[in-house]
Length: 578
Image (tube, rainbow, N blue to C red; front, side):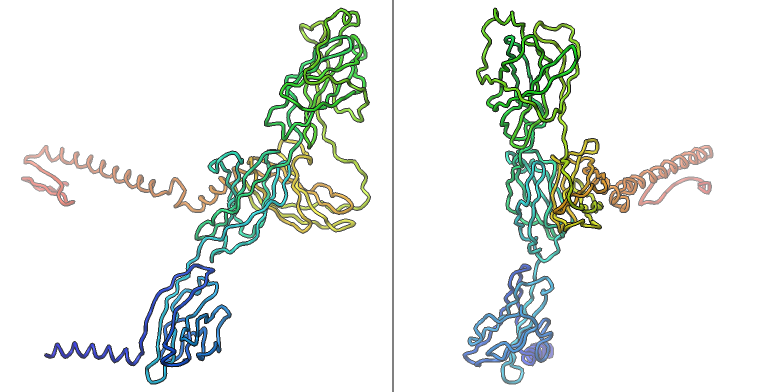
């Protein structure tokens, strides 16, 4: 009976506590960062009428709400901690559910709703546990800011970070015709980036680009896929297989093939054909004459006419795109036939493509030279004096009418795998405000060529991140521009990409010996322990064998074995010597 009474007493005490404390219910709500969280709470307004209620962060105390975030008198909200806390339900029907707009991770916790019902210990209490989980950042929206022959600059606007700071961006690029498995990936560990420039693209090639944002939770979904086509550039290779054949005393047939496909840098529009007489007595050339033909097929032919009899000619052919003219091809000098021979020779063959009469004209500037050399077996109509040509890039020599800006001073910010970041400043703008900057880059052993490798920046930009498509060692310099003139070149930086990331890893692991140092790795620790134990066992065995041999020389017998980790023995004599 006493035991039964004690059990009833415990139940009565629990009921009394619940009665005194009021009814308390609880639930859990889980949302992601940036979304609205709705914490349910309501009462019977038809029975009680409109009642006052409050919400607080924390468990509900004996009166009121702890850390009150919102309070209502049953008709309207009379106080709130922030505009983010709202009552979106129908107060007339007793719905006092709390809405937290754009929930953040720090909003997580226990919230209490207290409805003040008249009478002692009648208040309705409701606890809600809110969990706000961070997520990866939102996808980026990227666009091309500038597309050139070998560079492209892409930019994006900041996006919602998912509740955790963005720590890096990942840039993927691939040839449009290949799958994403062939992409080149670069991670940029600079969360403040809003644009990046990719260099060393191939002219006239089409690429796909995408960018991801990364935080501590994970990586965003892919951005929109950008399709860009690099602008055309002048061909980088000469025409191939050029041959000269004398047809008569006044004509020479020239045949050739286009440059290698990967060196065309665009759609071939035509060819510049330059030719001139060679005087073997004076060992010098006369002035250039030239003509232009359209690019039509993979085997081109043209006939030079109105030439002088028995005269040697040198010919240069350059392919051209809409962007410019490429390097010239090389071929031996060719002599027209003697005038008497041309009267009895067969009818000269005419090109299937076109026969163009060359109208002599004087070239403004000559950029080629000829070097005679003697062939072992010259043909009757062709003298093997090889004619070499070189393309010369010239900068503008226009006069400067104003004071240019001072040269910028550029500094390397960091190198990360196949990308690098730099910043610059300038001391004087010259006669007028800065209108922009342009960055030149080249392979460390190459010559500067502003017509090929230049990246433009705005007047207010002072730093940039560059992704190298072909990591190597580069020289970088910069120029400043105003409306009057361009500055002299800045200091030159020598930057090695590609290997830098590996060097960085070595530096980091040298500061973390227990994660990467081969001498301190766990596997090598275990090996060291096993070797030490093995040496001890071998040494013990040798000593034991030696002692046993000594004892065996005495009378008596000895048996020794291991059991439960202890040395046990039986013998007629004592084992003090052990």
